[in-house]
Amino acid sequence: MSKVSLALLVHSHQPVGNFDHVIEDAYQKSYAPFVRAVAAHPLIRMSLHFSGILLEWLEKHHPEYFQQLRELVKRGQIELVGGGYFEPILPVIPDADKLAQLHKLSAYLQHHFGAAPRGAWIAERVWEPTLPRPLAQAGVEYVMLDDTHFLSAGLQPWQLHGTFVTEEDGFPLRLVPSSKALRYTIPFQDPSETLRV
Image 1 (tube, rainbow, N blue to C red):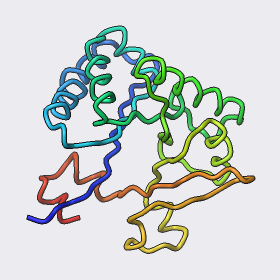
Image 2 (image 1 turned 90 degrees about the vertical axis):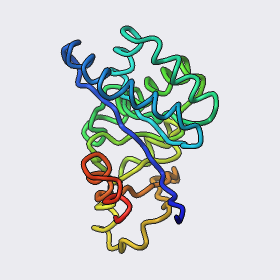
Image 3 (image 1 turned 135 degrees about the vertical axis):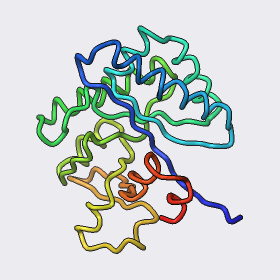
Image 4 (image 1 turned 180 degrees about the horizontal axis):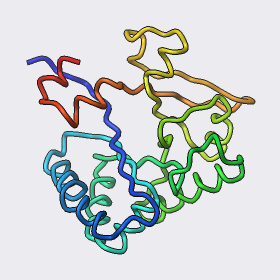
């Protein structure tokens, strides 16, 4: 069987004010089993993103989950990705607020897991060309964006198997195209369908 190289970034979020029982149900059915499965396969490496509000809830209700994440970070199996703490749509808030949101989640990850994030999650995948400067100023090296952004800019699907660099006012940022097709096949189709994409 031929090898498949796949960069995975898994995003987890709960809205501010969501009911404890709803988040607990998601924890029992999704968050906890997923991390156990990752831990059972140490050769699989990936990136995980959690919004700050979800991390606060996990810290309070399931501190053992934090220990599992710490172990995965320590052995280099997972990279925790930053972003806006409360999952804001970054282009619609002032730059000072962007920086505060990004710094808050970065400091939280550094404090609890001993590693500052290199990447950032872009909430709802909303991109504007004015984002590289505040993201880079916050220490972000890369973001993942929908392939539709790149396709709309005139690139072809076969060109999206690498990274791109953009900048604003001399602040560079690496862009990693994500696959819309994989975003829908991985959670909803059989693995054979995913491999065909």
